[in-house]
Image (tube, rainbow, N blue to C red):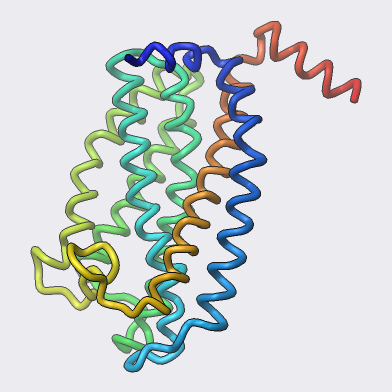
Length: 248
């Protein structure tokens, strides 16, 4: 059933597949982000309570959702690396960590900017905010471990263990507004049933979310490609690739 995946365990095959994927992801990301952000920031109606400050929602919520989604993907890659010794899985986890950290930071910064007019303060030790901050520290810890050892296998194992331990924080972030009495509002889009927003606000959000997701895919592909080259620099196909690019 999974035999079609076996060729992609080869670094050279994965590198060339990523190269083919990048132009499509980049084009789609540009289209969705352009439409979504223009629609959200210029044409979507203002919220009847929050006014135009509500527009931070179109950046904050995708960033916060992707910060968790990237971590879960990183944990799956780390598990595959630790259990099945897949070297490319470790490379993909290393590629994802800085991207996840960046989107977590964006979620925290935009959340603070949104919270100031709504709550009257930039920061409060709310359950959702605190658990999201812990997620940023987990990302930074994983990045530090990936760079702490010269032996990439040892670094990958240490980072993988921390990644898997940190997974417990994901459901805490997700359900913190339901488990505890917090200032942070509950789910608006992802809750079961009809979303708590009108369609003229929902559609630009969908475009923004897809656009940011595709942008994450582009950045991770670029970093994954670089990880493959760095970890296989002595291989003949990498040297041949460098020579071809030098001639060009």
